[in-house]
Image (cartoon, rainbow, N blue to C red; front, side, top):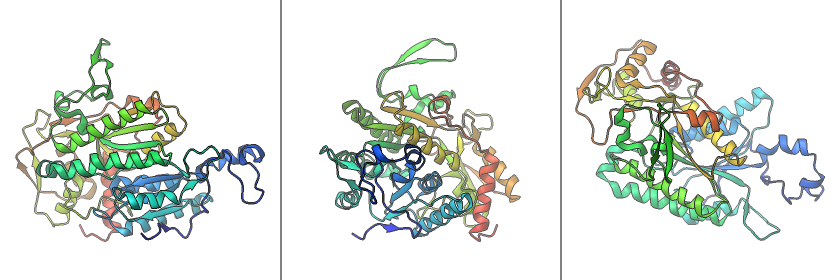
Length: 428
């Protein structure tokens, strides 16, 4: 396997932990002889974060935000649904940010292989091992953010084994290997699909509604009720893979307290980085709403199919909690920081990442028309298998425990998407 690609601006590889690591110049103990204030200030530059699927839509934005936060990043991406050029754009934007801030550009590496290729993964992880004086495995990689998964609901119904093989079996082998290398801080890309038909209740969704152990849930009336561990009415194999992965990770955390695992349940990411250089540009046929809207705006598609106009919502179209992808990416940084600080309530914890506000498909189309000054033809179409009428987050837990909340609006998301099209030279 080729060695991981390295940014020209990369900083020298350094151990992520001050514990019993010698400095190159003095061979003295950083922990006991170093300046503690300088050490703490420089701590993020001593860590590597491994990001699987780091060139995809959410992964690329999260990789950029990690670099802005001065984390060294190793990206694993097999480029099956992303482009090599995304890596170069991330590097450019991160370098520009640090130049403006007068700060040091962290390291950025790319390993272009499938995360399920265990031999390639071991070869990569071997390069970041740190000699331990106690015999236990240690790594310069202090955490993992795992995005690499198939995610199309309709495809999962047609080809479920593909989804179970990649999303579930792949995760088991991946986590097993990470554990062998002592890498036990793990941020998992989950989904609001784990709530299944609970979304059809029309009520905002709290994390306790999908639990991996019995929990007490307090409703708006303050009355407590016990929620049994399990899932309720998940409507498609994709959603089931996400729930299964959460359950596996919850069991792993329960079995080994050294693991710190966060499952982030995304709602509906939209928009792109304000620079216009990163966006949602998959190789495969898009299924998310706004990439399809863009194809209608550019004339590639004749019209937008609105799947279901008879939902029990205000205008009949499905309601979703649309979250700007930059807000979503920053939610991963918040989760990583809290996990590394060991400040989680328990060593497996699920969080909703959403705005707490719902917008219908029609409202999104109207907003895009308003921002772009471009008419978007639509047609009514039957509901798609696996869809639900409404899905909106309660984000209180994320705000309180991760110290995170969204900042960007639906209009911001539409505006950033128009910027992406402009920068890409796409005529409207």
